[in-house]
Every structure is written in structure tokens, then in C-alpha cells.
Length: 56
Image (cartoon, rainbow, N blue to C red; front, top):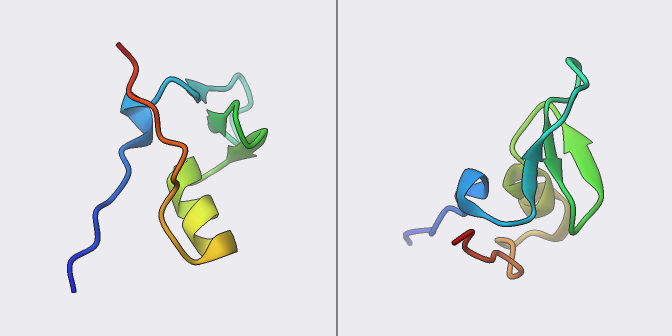
């Protein structure tokens, strides 16, 4: 079973925060964390982020 990993750094909702303790953020889910937001989403709901939107 192969899983497609969401690359947050290419998503329009992803951003780098000013908080050294929680450097990665997602504007859509209003999340700041030490891990990529896609990992937090996967741990919370058990599936990959379905709201990924490519930043172009």
C-alpha cells in the first residue's frame, strides 16, 4: 500500500511562523507545530490532507 505524502511547503496555506518552538503553520487549519502540518492532520483524522492546494 503506497501512501501519497502531501508536501506542505508547496501548498498555498503553508507558512513559516516567527515562533521558534512551532516553526511550521497551516492557515487553513490554523495550526502551528514542530512538525509539518500534513503530519498533524494525518495523526488527527487518519488520512492525508484533502485541502492541499498548489501554490502557483
